[in-house]
Image (cartoon, rainbow, N blue to C red):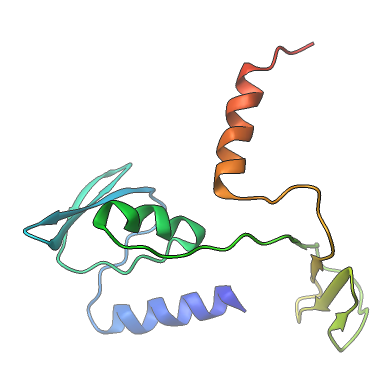
Length: 138
């Protein structure tokens, strides 16, 4: 449960005096004399000497200008969550091309596996937006 784990980490950090800033896009991490000094966001600059970069697949892009290499691997998968459903099963189900687990609230976490025609990466998403903007509409 990534959401619950994230919330637990955030609560533990806040209890120790950490300031958590949410709902803003981190654009870059700035340094002074080789040490973190600020974080530039879409809502302004935050002065700090410590950063926890929890940007998921985007973390490597934030780290690269700092001279850090964080390998990010492609994943061929699709994940979705349904609206609440009547009880389907008490156990997780895993097969070669699909997996699912019903949560306590009735929603299903669904995952697809197998082969895909295209590896989805962050660049794929960026280029997809670029091509849609330049494709004439009918």
